[in-house]
Image (cartoon, rainbow, N blue to C red; front, top):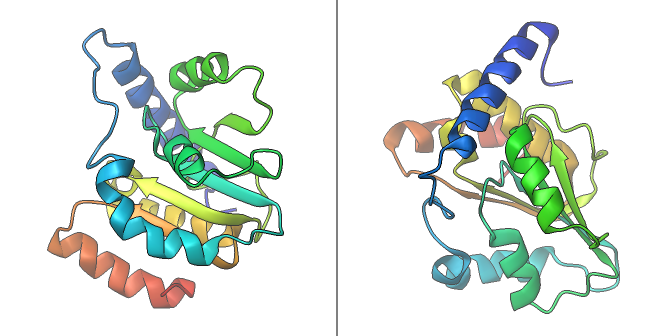
Length: 186
């Protein structure tokens, strides 16, 4: 597992931080960075290549927050939810409870409370698409960021794609450039 016992306390700290954020009355931010529609022209070429029309499709939104990017993708591409599962994963207990209520009755949408550095709900090599929209930015330190990328790579099926929307800072680009080859990512 990517997260050892010493990191469990840090997981709880992350959870407390985000629970506090989502309890605020003034939280209106739904999309960090960009909406699906504004990024669609860039995402399309990667999404099309990663989808296997004949196989079960698993789409994962890691650190989903209030974003609708996974749902927007499913609706935009007319993806058949009979053969697709959308995992909305977040560390916030408060948020995941709200998501479960919002998506109750839709068995194709799984709302899971988990740490992005240790995704227990999915096995190795099962996801066609893994979205990270701002989660990498929300983690403290390169070790946590690499642990998250390692987990995303672990759950990714061959031919699948990790789509990361993040601040394009020199430090972030350097991290991705050094971590990608070590993790077997392009």
